Structures are given as C-alpha cells and as structure tokens.
Amino acid sequence: MNFSYYIAKRYLFTKSKNNAINIITIIASIGVFAGAMALFIVLSGFSGLKEFSLSFSNKFDPDLKVLPKTGKYFIYSEEQQQQLLQIEGIKITSKVIEERVLLNFKDKNVPSSYIKGVDENFLKVNAVDSTLLAGTWLHQDEKQVVVGNGISRKLSIGVAGYGDVLRIFVPKPGKGQVSNPNNAFNAISSMVIGIYSINEDLDNKYVYAPFSLAQNLLELNENEISAIEISLTDTANVDEVRAAIQQIFQQNVLIKDRVQLNDKLYKMLNTENLAVYLIFTLILIIALFNVGGAIVMAILDKQHNIKTLYNLGANIHQIRRVFFLQGTLLTFFGGVLGLAIACVIILLQQQFSLVMITPSLPYPVLFEAKNLMIVFLTIMSLGIIASYIGSTRIKRVIEINS
Image (cartoon, rainbow, N blue to C red; front, side, top):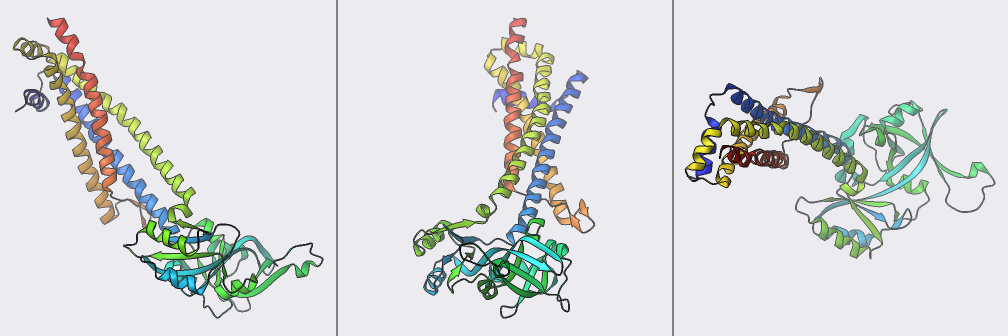
C-alpha cells in the first residue's frame, strides 16, 4: 500500500489525543457534508422549477416552427406540404395564421391581442386543449374562438353565453389615407367556446380561431400563412430535418426550435441557475477553509511524528502528500455522504411530496446526474485546493524541528 496514503488514512480515522483537533476535524467534515448536501438540493430544486416553468411553454410551442424570413406571411403550397411530410423525423405539421387584433365585447376593448388561426392538425402538434379551464376546443366550420384567461377577465366574458358576441377587428390591408374610419377595419363576430390558461403572458395575448375564419378576416390568399408548426418523432435528427426544410423552401424561411422561440426565458433561467450555483459555491469555499485549517492543526499536532518520519528517510514531498491526502479523503467522504443524503431527500420529495407550495402543488424537484457530477467536482476541486494550501505548512514545521 502507498506509504503516504496509508499514513493519511490512519490520521483521518484515528482519534487524536488533543480533543481540540478532533473537534476541528469534525467541524470540517460537517462543513463538507452540509455544503455538498445543500448545493445538490438547491440545484435539484432549481432544475425542478425550471422544468415546471418550461412545461407551460412546451404546451404552446412546437418542436420546430417555420417562419418567413421577411414580412409577415409566406406561400405554402400543397406540394410543399407533401414534401414536408415525407421528411424523415417529421410526425405532423400544422398551418398557422397570426396577426394583431382589437377585441371588443359590449363596452370593453382589448387592443393588443393576437388572433391565431389554427387548422385541424393543431392539437396534434400542441396539446393546448389540455390547458382549458372551461368550455371545449373550437370547431373548424364554426365562428368560434378560444380565449386566454387574462382576456376573459379583462372583457368579463364567459363561455357560450347566450347573446354574448365577441367582436374581432383588424385593419384592412392596403395603403393610403383612410377617408372613412368605418371602412378602415375588417370585423367578425364570434362566440367564445373555451377559455385556456397557460401563463400570464399567453393568457393575455392569444385568441385561437379556426384557420379559415382568420384567413377571411385578414383577406389572405389561399396559400398564405404566418407559420408552420411541426411535431417531430422521438428519433428525429433536428439538424437533418432543418436542412431538408430549408431545401424545400429554398432558404426563404427561418426555422426555430423551442429554445430559440423562448430564448429570453431560457437565458433568464440559465442566468438564475448560474447565479445560484456561484452563491452556494462561495459558501462552500468559506466552509472548505475549515479543511485547510484542520490540516494545519493536524500538522502542528503531529510535529513529533513528522520529525520521526523525516529522520526515517521520508522526504518533504512524501510527508506533505500525507496531509494533502488526509484533506482530500476528508473532502471525498464528507462530499459523498452529503450527496447520498441529498439524493435520498430529493427522491423522497418526488415520491411523497414532503414539501408543498400549495395544498395541491408539491415543490418541484428534478434528480439529474448532471447536478450530481457538478456538485461532486466542485466539492473535490475546492477540497483539493484547500488541502494543498494546508499541506504547504509542512516545510516550515520540518525547518523548525531540524
């Protein structure tokens, strides 16, 4: 067995005659244990919150979305539709029309909403119907709409109320000055058949309508659309699918995935995750100073042993390595124990919902191997640095005792 490792293990697991040294070692061990446990629990909790937040947008956003490179609309022919469906990895596609509209119900207006005309395939791409608070999803052949919960509250409109007609206005296409304001807008009357709730922004933004209704309201040609929303198979190669789509549309479109469609949200969540990690790493650095302190105190306590080892032929490097390994082993065992307890806590929370946000909503946590590796590497890196700094005291002790 390696000489330095053997001595380091003996020093770590053998009680010192000096009780103060034992207390300092125990404090250092608890610091490593608690730091590793706390960092993993916090990262797992944040991962759970991130997944919980993104789950709402994932119900609204497709795997891929094809948008015009310039302008609001582009031409989407039947031939291109058939070519898209033949691409390996594409499960189904849905045509979408989006435009800003003004909503009117009785004496109330909402001027900054968007109509989203969707076809019969839309629910196969995005399960928005699973977010309905009341009512049902719309039918393509009827003048029906589904509004967000925020819009419903602003207009004080319910579902399928007798005589309740929601008016939707959009400026008529064209150029030049409008002489008669009454002729400046296209308008349709519709009935609210459902109310959805995804998140605050979307609830105040979109009104879902049948594709043909939105097309007629905006006076679009038959093949003009705003976007194509695409659902991919589980085995799809996203890069290959992107390239195939670009080839069909001759590079005249933009293709965005969920991350690109929600780039601000992802950046915010990733920044918060990094900030939480750095804050807790700073706390770990302070806690791991105790490891360096414990090594220095162990060196002072073992001065006579160090002198004996030196006189028996052990060089400074070997003796320094003894205390370096002692600190590294202390960090390793404390970190592993902390991670083990943290894993048990996270799994218990997932299975039994020990901590609740509301009576019906458990605090979301997510067990990820990535977080496990990040915490272990962070703990070991800081512990090794602290152990190295503490072990450099050996040279001075040997010089004093020589």
